[in-house]
Image 1 (cartoon, rainbow, N blue to C red):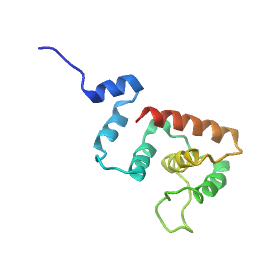
Image 2 (image 1 turned 45 degrees about the horizontal axis):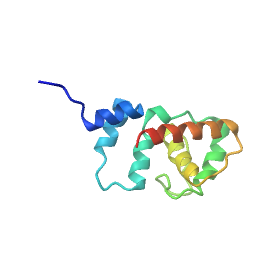
Image 3 (image 1 turned 30 degrees about the vertical axis):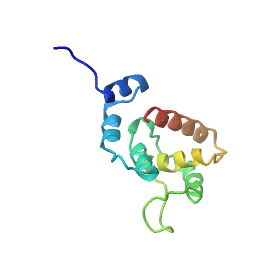
Length: 119
């Protein structure tokens, strides 16, 4: 017999998608909406960056303007984890939000690049 690659393995190879990310993509329901896709992408370790102390105010401010909110009471929600940072920054990128901090702009660009390969 011969060995033939699956559709998923061809996508992984062509787009440089790692195995764990591909497992998350495959687990998505066929009718997943933007929120579910955003949550899945936010959990991809390849596009996560640590939340630095000096970024928290900027990220929390950006969170006020994104469509999908982090879970919890609005007055208590704060961006604290790398997953939450990705969740807010990918939406900020779609909304063309400008971050004055160069490192945040650079990370946002890397997140978008990494997320676009995960399609």
